[in-house]
Each structure stands twice: as C-alpha cells, then as structure tokens.
Image 1 (cartoon, rainbow, N blue to C red):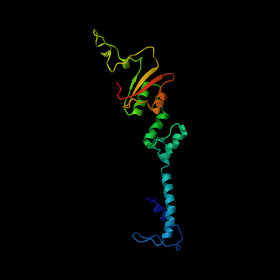
Image 2 (cartoon, rainbow, N blue to C red):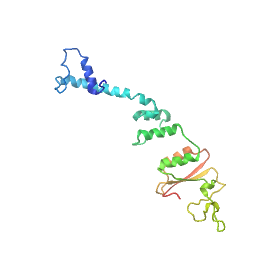
Image 3 (cartoon, rainbow, N blue to C red):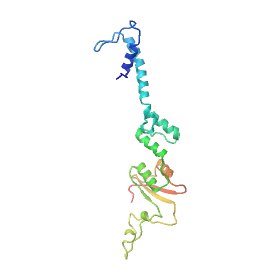
Image 4 (cartoon, rainbow, N blue to C red):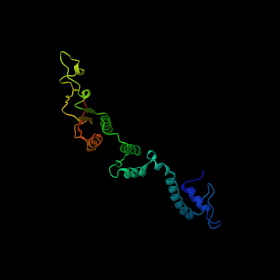
Length: 208
C-alpha cells in the first residue's frame, strides 16, 4: 500500500529529482545528509497529505448520514440559512439529528408536542387537553367513588376539563423550577402545533 503520509509524499517527490543533483534519501537508521532539501520536501509532503486526506473524505461528505464537521454546517446553511445553526459545543451526531428533524418534520399532532417537550427538557412532561377526558379524568362521588376513575376534589392529578376550550392544551415542563419557560422551548412547541391552536406552557418542579 502506498505511503500517503507527509513523509511518504516527500520521498516520492525526492525520487523524481534528477539523479546526481542531490543526495539520495537516507537508509533506515541513518542520518539525513540533505536536511535543507528534506525540510523543503516535507513542506510539500504536508500539503499533499492534507489534500489526499480531504479527497479521501469527499465521498462521505456527499450524504447527510456521513457528513461531518464544516460540511454538515454548510448543508444546514444551504437548506435553512441562518434558521438552523450548530449550537456551541454540539456534536456532529446531535446536529445531524436536528437537521433530519427539520428536513422531515412530523407536525400537528399531540405526540409531536410530547416528543418536543421530552427533547427540550430531557424527560417527559405532562400535556393536558381540556376536551380530553383521559387528561382531565372525572369527578367521583360518595355514592359512586369509582366514577371517572375515582378522582375527586383535592386529588393532585385531577384537572377540570371544558368543552368550551377547544384547540388548546396545557403543558407542564419538569424542569425542576418555576421559572418562565425557555424561549427556544416555546418556539419549538409552537413550530409543531397546528395552526389556530394555543399551548399554555409552564415550568414545574414535578408535573402532577
């Protein structure tokens, strides 16, 4: 196999020089007799080795699945301009995942909101739709305590539903604090919500 290192390219150039003009390359274990020539050729060898490495990696840079480094940033810039850029310290794999999600987005469904929250916060949050009985449960009573799943006043998991509040949801983000939600999180939730709908979002210590 050809030596494609810096020294390998320097030796190949040296062998092309006219015989007798310069001293031959040193044998293994012997000292270099033409250090100035060798230094000059090593400079050329460094450039050729870098070019060879760039060419060898060109094939990988033609597909999103195998792109890396600056080529991944250029791909994102070609498709999304300044709307999708690499975060500080973000790895190629993490950035590639965000690009793929932006290229082939799943939008407009409840699972999309749930997945976005989990992606932003790192764990599942709680989504409550006022018109969804599964989210809001139902009220029990002394005569029929199991009605509505056995929930009643004062039960932490109970939420009051309403048929008068369509196309809205409440989202609790388990961030461990009660600060206002991050702007990036709100923007990402808005991006996957259907047109004409509203999401009321809050950070909570623990979703109940």
